[in-house]
Image 1 (cartoon, rainbow, N blue to C red):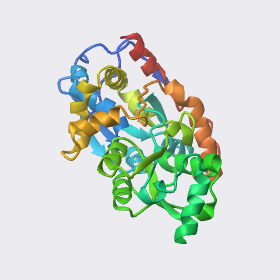
Image 2 (image 1 turned 120 degrees about the vertical axis):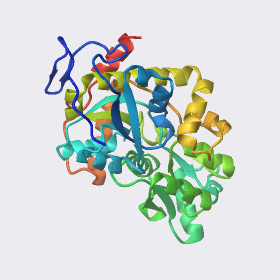
Image 3 (image 1 turned 135 degrees about the vertical axis):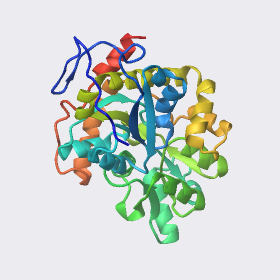
Image 4 (image 1 turned 90 degrees about the vertical axis):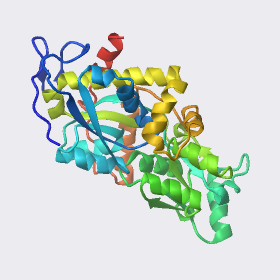
Length: 348
């Protein structure tokens, strides 16, 4: 699909290097004969729900926007598509954006959708060893001692938020012995299936996968919440390239405004949001009750303010350098563009 170049904002809307100025988008974009199709790349997890809610509530249509959504198994895969020019909007983890920025891709984080969303789930064999009060490192040690092999823990590729979060938890929080665990890289769906099938002993999951696996097998246990794994863990964000922001500032503002409204709606009225989330993420395989459990889960923390994750993003970048996902620290100045969020809040 080819995106036609649209007119820029009228008087008062100026787009410069790293700056976006102009009025808040209100209603339909003047002079647009057909909707602007935004090519969105996202990971199909609960944190992506705000963009679906904004679409289904009609807020994006009011601004003459239409979405074309492509799903990805991990943030690094979505980044590749964004870098190649086949996506306009990135809705996935913050960590791959740091890696891409270090490699010269000019990206702007304009909103968050969720924080502390990656949690650790233990399969039955591992969960049975997790006695109350027993240090988690000892749980892993006992597993290896009993079976003669390390616990296999599934997560997404190096450079992703789930991978970074898991490693931080294992080595910095739990202080696990590397001999006691083996990290296995796989996609999101594969991780969920591997935990259900007992092919791994645990792994990082996000909602609604947590509600799905614990609902299907009560012996599967939520072992660590996101904040315990990485404090104020920055999760899913919304990002554009600087080129897209320069080309389509009105569309960018309208999308962020819709997401801010959607995060508010999900928090106030999850019953209203549940059918939308079920239709978008359930794919006919996840029922309404599971979606509602996911929305009420302690693993679910929707948040739209990009300013709230700046400090934690810097901490995550430093840890990525430590584990070899990044070669060096890159200044985060200019990565976050909070003014679209601020305008969206001010317009409500």
